[in-house]
Image (cartoon, rainbow, N blue to C red; front, side, top):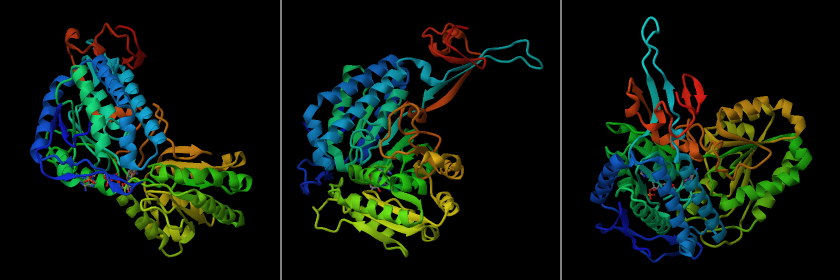
Length: 527
Ligand code: NAP
């Protein structure tokens, strides 16, 4: 049952008087629960509880944290249809997507549970002492990774489950041993409260300290900023706009003790299509990309927003076909009226720049929060001279650039801001000549795809979901996959520490038989 209250640790709380409602974009009406925004006193209480919980939680065994994460997954599944209905009513996304995203959320939680069920994930390193070393004896040094402290997670609008309350940021931070305070997304506060109730139930059932998790509603500029500025908060996870992510990054940097902000922000995910690929399979590419551009109403961070081609007659025919096929797909509902407003505004801003031609756009009367899909095109020279065309248009929109030759195409890639993905559509005959494009893309993106689509992010250890700024605020980390846990830990070394006082993962006898780097060699035996 939805209450509209915040979870301050295990307690439901609503001491403030400011409230908001979520919105059903399909029906174009407000949903009927009032969500009470947290007061600054409630923020303080949540952080204090998290700080206190950290002292206990950081020392709870990996096996117990795994039990907690698996229990969260079980409780989310136990929410059943109530969660699906809430999700669809607050996002306009279909039931199939809700259930798919729930599956991914549960999978992520269980993957982190498995990861931390032994201590191998901490990348333990042992360099044993050498008293005879000249000119000075070598000390015994043993390194592991330890949790940073309470983490604030900003839920993302476009993934109400998998990148929100119990999404990848929360799951990885809890797995690492960090308590989490979620700044709920105002557009799906009901979904957030249901998932938060599952986390609290799991925490109580598995005996986790009160404060290991809180869920807070409120404005980003007030509640979100207060959380990021709080001295007892030690890191931030964010998915959303460049403006929002950058504002929080700046706040964190201005603190007396600056803290890391792992923000995943805008990306237009360039796709390079070679002339040979157009000659061989223009129709197939147009079909596939019409689907990719409109998938999820284009509201994916990996949506292909920029298609780079080399000009020619075949290319012009391909662009026309792609535009017709993309705009022939029935318009779909967007997440919220504000996302639709920004989509229309940003699409118009790009398409009104000098030299840009709207190749095809949905022009018929559509439902209020549905997206008018649009494909525009421009020459490489115009694109290069006008950075306004490089901005993300979040929704079913792509700008196709016609470069005069490969050199100009590479210059365009070099001019782009950092991106999550880069894609190349090429024939085998192209492969030996792709070096320049591959090098340029590798310098600008976090993941490169050959003959596929950028939409669809596999949750796997080998996935990089990040990239140079502004795709993410720190390109050394991924926001997806088990390695995302590394965002919430720091290395810590023990020097000349008695064996019996070391954590099990660093003890000579290696009781759990985990792999460690011992004197520069991987080993899972005792010393
Ligand atoms: P958003 O506006 O960046 O908001 C995300 C969260 O950050 C919200 O909780 C918001 O609080 C908070 N926030 C925003 N600006 C802030 C500020 N200056 N100070 C403190 N907190 C702030 O993103 P959104 O609502 O999810 O979607 C809006 C746009 O973001 C989309 O149209 C799209 O362009 C972009 N987006 C990009 C991606 C991506 O992966 N590339 C994903 C989702 C969205 P409030 O609740 O007060 O707004």
